[in-house]
Image (cartoon, rainbow, N blue to C red):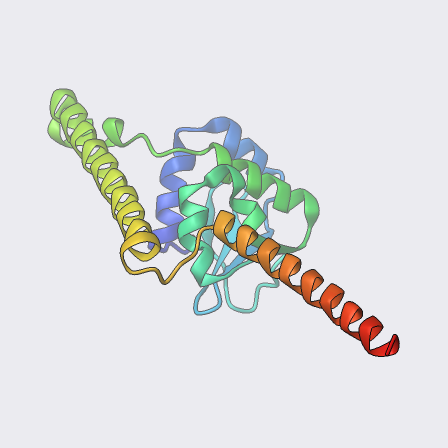
Length: 191
């Protein structure tokens, strides 16, 4: 079996999920290619439902293409990950890959517990989650402050309501000018 860091990580997740290995085993011998433009990963399903790196001459049964710029969105929202990708090939195999990508989860506490003990693992995971939440809140606040700056203090952006109001005023002005032009034409014609 050819191992890569990616196939090893996926196999680590699959090792504790017999239902997932059973689903994949039905597709033994098939190759899935994940293409992000700058890099492509080719994985082959083994008869036991685990994965291994595919040979370069192995034809992909399913190809999943994603834009590199969409990868953060895919990681952030796994439930909708497949809405960011283009899929070609074996629909049943692609569906299985999609289901597994939504369902398989890394149990960090369990793995860290084996190394550091259960109590330390819980604290480590809680700490990382707290840091992630703080970073997310900080990012959200930064974006809000940046938007406020560009809307209020240094207006480079315009609120949609203001665009609508301006558009309405332009439309009214255009209609008024057209009516005035018609009045002028009538006055010229009555001379």
